[in-house]
Image (cartoon, rainbow, N blue to C red; front, side, top):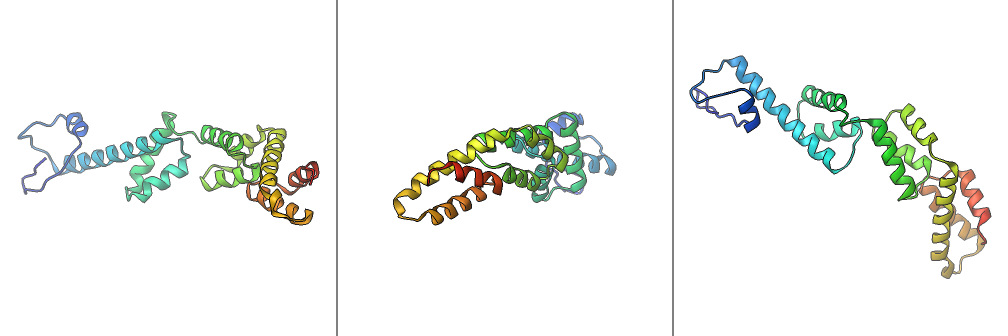
Length: 191
């Protein structure tokens, strides 16, 4: 779009069509500002959809990513609220899928999952509700599998029992398992 003062505005085709512009149309200053705002909104939505197309995100996580691209904060909020109302963003669904993946595929402990969800901006009540759905037996089974795998990799290193226990404890703690669970797992292993 070329203005009278030879200033150019590059509009998305969709925004151009939505406003019904034709060659030679007179456009007021207010209309120009509105069209520019619509164009920015379109770019923000497009970015948000592209980000969500790769994987689910929490509200705060998506807000941070869009803000890092230097978009206007008020427009970001408007896009995020629209995504929320259309159920493209849902922190509870995100937390459920995220925790399932981390628990079942990555075999992390609930403490680590809780920390990661908090870092992604999920509220404490959603985290507690989602993590309470996971069974303790799954977490114990994961810790046992990881400990057995780690133990087999440490066997050939001629470490005494105390050193093996220390290494296994550190390894399991780094994966997000709590002290009591680690102690139970170490007691079950034949070291």
